[in-house]
Figure 1 (tube, rainbow, N blue to C red):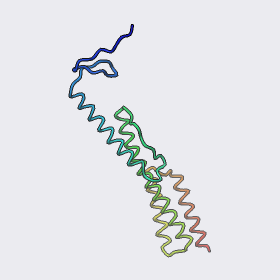
Figure 2: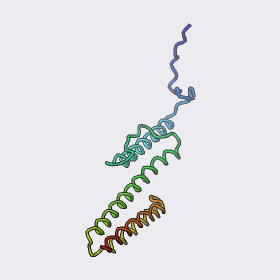
Figure 3: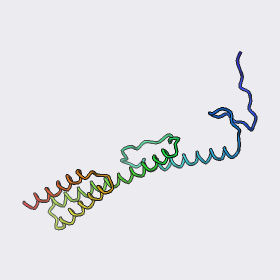
Figure 4: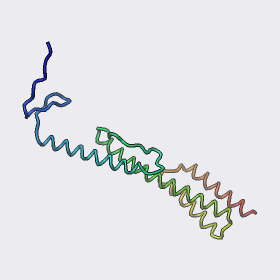
Length: 149
Protein backbone atom coordinates (compact mmCIF):
# COMPACT_ATOMS: atom_id res chain seq x y z
CA UNK A 1 0.00 0.00 0.00
CA UNK A 2 1.39 3.41 -0.99
CA UNK A 3 1.49 6.16 1.56
CA UNK A 4 0.70 9.62 0.31
CA UNK A 5 2.28 12.75 1.73
CA UNK A 6 -0.06 14.42 4.16
CA UNK A 7 -0.38 18.20 3.90
CA UNK A 8 1.29 19.96 6.82
CA UNK A 9 -0.39 22.72 8.77
CA UNK A 10 0.85 26.26 8.12
CA UNK A 11 2.79 26.39 11.39
CA UNK A 12 4.95 23.35 10.47
CA UNK A 13 7.65 23.13 7.85
CA UNK A 14 9.51 20.13 6.42
CA UNK A 15 13.27 20.50 6.99
CA UNK A 16 16.32 18.29 6.65
CA UNK A 17 15.94 17.44 10.36
CA UNK A 18 12.29 16.46 10.03
CA UNK A 19 9.17 18.51 10.57
CA UNK A 20 9.89 21.66 12.56
CA UNK A 21 7.70 24.48 13.83
CA UNK A 22 7.71 27.40 11.40
CA UNK A 23 8.20 30.96 12.52
CA UNK A 24 8.68 34.23 10.71
CA UNK A 25 11.87 34.83 12.72
CA UNK A 26 13.54 31.70 11.39
CA UNK A 27 12.58 32.67 7.83
CA UNK A 28 14.12 36.14 8.26
CA UNK A 29 17.23 34.58 9.81
CA UNK A 30 17.60 32.26 6.81
CA UNK A 31 17.21 35.21 4.44
CA UNK A 32 19.97 37.11 6.29
CA UNK A 33 22.31 34.12 6.09
CA UNK A 34 21.66 33.73 2.37
CA UNK A 35 22.29 37.46 1.82
CA UNK A 36 25.60 37.19 3.71
CA UNK A 37 26.69 34.18 1.66
CA UNK A 38 25.73 35.95 -1.55
CA UNK A 39 27.71 39.07 -0.64
CA UNK A 40 30.70 36.92 0.38
CA UNK A 41 30.62 35.10 -2.97
CA UNK A 42 30.43 38.42 -4.85
CA UNK A 43 33.43 39.76 -2.91
CA UNK A 44 35.45 36.59 -3.44
CA UNK A 45 34.63 36.49 -7.16
CA UNK A 46 35.55 40.16 -7.58
CA UNK A 47 38.89 39.58 -5.86
CA UNK A 48 39.77 36.42 -7.76
CA UNK A 49 38.43 37.25 -11.22
CA UNK A 50 41.24 39.67 -12.01
CA UNK A 51 43.08 39.07 -15.27
CA UNK A 52 46.13 36.91 -14.76
CA UNK A 53 44.91 35.50 -11.45
CA UNK A 54 46.27 31.97 -11.23
CA UNK A 55 43.20 30.51 -9.55
CA UNK A 56 40.51 32.52 -11.32
CA UNK A 57 37.46 30.37 -11.00
CA UNK A 58 33.94 31.13 -9.95
CA UNK A 59 32.90 29.89 -6.53
CA UNK A 60 29.56 28.18 -6.75
CA UNK A 61 29.12 27.75 -3.02
CA UNK A 62 30.83 28.67 0.21
CA UNK A 63 31.42 26.25 3.08
CA UNK A 64 28.78 25.89 5.75
CA UNK A 65 31.10 26.54 8.68
CA UNK A 66 31.36 30.19 9.66
CA UNK A 67 35.12 30.14 10.27
CA UNK A 68 35.68 28.53 6.86
CA UNK A 69 33.57 31.22 5.18
CA UNK A 70 35.89 33.78 6.76
CA UNK A 71 38.96 31.81 5.61
CA UNK A 72 37.73 31.88 2.01
CA UNK A 73 37.48 35.66 2.12
CA UNK A 74 40.77 36.24 3.91
CA UNK A 75 42.56 33.85 1.56
CA UNK A 76 41.22 35.79 -1.42
CA UNK A 77 42.45 39.07 0.08
CA UNK A 78 45.87 37.61 0.90
CA UNK A 79 46.18 36.15 -2.59
CA UNK A 80 45.45 39.52 -4.16
CA UNK A 81 47.95 41.25 -1.86
CA UNK A 82 50.67 38.66 -2.51
CA UNK A 83 50.06 38.89 -6.24
CA UNK A 84 50.66 42.64 -6.24
CA UNK A 85 53.81 42.27 -4.12
CA UNK A 86 55.22 39.61 -6.47
CA UNK A 87 54.38 41.71 -9.52
CA UNK A 88 56.12 44.76 -8.03
CA UNK A 89 59.12 42.58 -7.13
CA UNK A 90 59.50 41.25 -10.68
CA UNK A 91 59.10 44.72 -12.18
CA UNK A 92 61.72 46.22 -9.86
CA UNK A 93 64.22 43.44 -10.56
CA UNK A 94 63.75 43.87 -14.32
CA UNK A 95 64.27 47.63 -14.00
CA UNK A 96 67.44 47.09 -11.97
CA UNK A 97 68.81 44.61 -14.52
CA UNK A 98 68.02 46.93 -17.43
CA UNK A 99 69.66 49.85 -15.58
CA UNK A 100 72.76 47.73 -15.08
CA UNK A 101 72.98 46.71 -18.73
CA UNK A 102 72.29 50.26 -19.95
CA UNK A 103 74.98 51.64 -17.64
CA UNK A 104 72.81 54.48 -16.33
CA UNK A 105 74.15 56.94 -13.76
CA UNK A 106 71.57 56.20 -11.05
CA UNK A 107 72.64 52.56 -11.01
CA UNK A 108 73.25 52.43 -7.25
CA UNK A 109 69.85 53.98 -6.47
CA UNK A 110 68.01 51.47 -8.63
CA UNK A 111 69.93 48.55 -7.13
CA UNK A 112 69.28 49.76 -3.59
CA UNK A 113 65.60 50.15 -4.48
CA UNK A 114 65.53 46.57 -5.74
CA UNK A 115 67.18 45.36 -2.53
CA UNK A 116 64.57 47.24 -0.52
CA UNK A 117 61.67 45.70 -2.45
CA UNK A 118 63.20 42.22 -2.06
CA UNK A 119 63.56 42.75 1.71
CA UNK A 120 59.94 43.92 1.97
CA UNK A 121 58.79 40.81 0.10
CA UNK A 122 60.66 38.68 2.64
CA UNK A 123 59.12 40.62 5.53
CA UNK A 124 55.61 40.10 4.16
CA UNK A 125 56.23 36.37 3.71
CA UNK A 126 55.95 36.34 -0.07
CA UNK A 127 59.58 35.42 -0.65
CA UNK A 128 61.83 33.05 1.30
CA UNK A 129 64.97 34.61 2.76
CA UNK A 130 67.25 32.28 0.79
CA UNK A 131 65.47 33.13 -2.47
CA UNK A 132 65.88 36.81 -1.59
CA UNK A 133 69.60 36.34 -0.99
CA UNK A 134 69.88 34.55 -4.33
CA UNK A 135 68.13 37.39 -6.16
CA UNK A 136 70.27 40.04 -4.45
CA UNK A 137 73.40 38.08 -5.27
CA UNK A 138 72.42 37.81 -8.93
CA UNK A 139 71.84 41.57 -9.15
CA UNK A 140 75.16 42.30 -7.41
CA UNK A 141 76.98 39.87 -9.73
CA UNK A 142 75.53 41.55 -12.84
CA UNK A 143 76.42 44.99 -11.46
CA UNK A 144 79.99 43.91 -10.75
CA UNK A 145 80.34 42.40 -14.23
CA UNK A 146 79.00 45.59 -15.81
CA UNK A 147 81.37 47.74 -13.73
CA UNK A 148 84.35 45.60 -14.76
CA UNK A 149 83.71 46.25 -18.46
